Length: 587
Image (cartoon, rainbow, N blue to C red; front, side, top):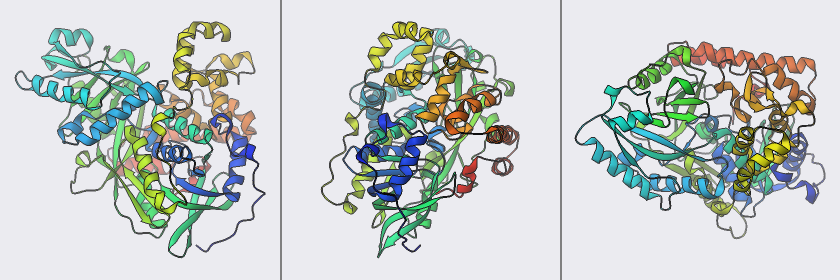
C-alpha cells in the first residue's frame, strides 16, 4: 500500500495523553482515534488478547509511546476462552519442559502476591490415585518438584490422602474410581477480566488502547515497516498510524497477519481447539477441583463460583478462526471422561454453558496438538515488524517482555529494562485493606458483605469507582435473571471498560453467557437498556443488538448438536454478528 499522509487534527494536549484511571469509555475512544492519526508511536501493538495487552503495558512502563489496536473486543479470542488457570502445567513436567514450568510457577506467584491478588486466587485440586504401587510415589515426586520449582510459594504444598480421606473431600467420586488421592494447589482467574485489567493498566500508563479498530494495510519506507492503516469498524473511518515498530500479537491469526504484511514468517502457528462445559456447583459434590488423566492429556474439573468448569479438549482446527465451534462429539468426550469417576453422572441437561477457544501453538514435528510445545517464539520478521506466538496464558508477562526486547533494534535510543514484575495491575493497590473493611463498605453502600467481596474480587480497589456510577437506587440491584451481577456493573463496563456491544458485556465484562442456562437471553433486554444511554442507542439499535446476540446464542446451541467441526463451523460462521463482522478476516 502506498504511503498516504492523513489529514490529522492538531496534536492532543498533555491532558489527553493518559486515560484517567485507565478508562476506556466513549470519550477516551474519541481521543484515542485522534491520537492514532496525529502522533508517531514507538510501538504499535496489533491484537488485544493477553499477550498484546501485556506488550502494551511492558512498553508503556519502559517509557515508550505505545498504541494497541484490536479488530474486535479485548480478549474476544483465546484470552476469554481458556481454562482460567494460572498454573505451571503438571503435564509439562512429564514432557520434560522444566524451564516452562519453572517460569510459569514464578509468574503464578507474582500474580498471587504482588501484581493481581484481587484477580488471581489459589485453587485446590485432587489427583485421584488409581494404581496401587507406582502411582503415588511417581506423582508425589512430580508434585514435590512442582511445589519447589517456582521458588517462593504462597499456596500450600501437596497433601496425601487415603481413599476415605479423598472421598470425604470429594464425595462425588465413585469409591471404585480411586484408591487414594493427593491434593495440590494452583491458581485461577477470570481470564477476560484479567486481560481487560492489563489493557487498562497500559492505558493508565499512557498507551492508546482501542478496540473495533482493524488493521487494513501496512506502510513501508524502503525495506522497513513504518506503520499501518486502520479502520474504525463501527463507522468505517480510516487513518494512518506511524510507528517505529509494529508487534504482531494476534495469536492464531499470526500467519495471516504476516502474509498481509508482505513479510516471510519465521515460524508457523497451529490452532488447537479447546472446549469447556460449565455445570452447576451442586451437580458435583466436592470441596476441591479435580485433575484427571486422559489418554492424551489431562482433564480439569475447576471450581468457578457457583459452577464447575470441565475441560478441555485438544484437537486440530483448520476452519474459520473467528468462530471455533463446540460439537456434540466434543461435549460427549468431556462427559465421558468426567463421568468415569463420578458416582452420579453428568448429562447434557446439566450443562449451563459451553465455550470453545483456539490455542496458538507453534507448529512442529508432532501431528498431535497435545504434544506441541507451549514455549513461545519471538522473531523480527522484517525491519520494523516483530511477531510473537505460542506460549501459555500464565506466561504472558514474560512473552511481552521478550517481544519488546526483540523490538529494541528498531527503537531509537536506549531501551529501559522491563519492570512489569513490579507494576501491580489496576485494583491491586489497597485491595487487602478493603477486604478487611468489607463489612463497613457493605453498610456504606447498602449491600450484603458477600456482594462487596464478590465485587472486590472483580475490581479490587476500583470498587468505589464502580459503585459511583450508580445514579439510581435500582442500579445497586442485581440484573434480572443474572443475580451474581449488579446493574451498575453494566454502566461501568461502558463508561470505563470499553464495552461497545451487548455481547461485550454478557460474554466478557461479565460471564453471564456461560454461567446461566439462558446464556444471557433472559437479561439481554435489561442490559441493552442500561447500555443505551451512555452509548446513545435509539430503540432500533437496542432491538438490533438484542437480535444479534440472541441469534449468536441460537447458533452456538445449534453447533453443539452437530456431529463434526465442519457442520458446527458452518452454523456459527453464518450467524449474524455485531458490526465487527465487517472486520473479517480479522487482522
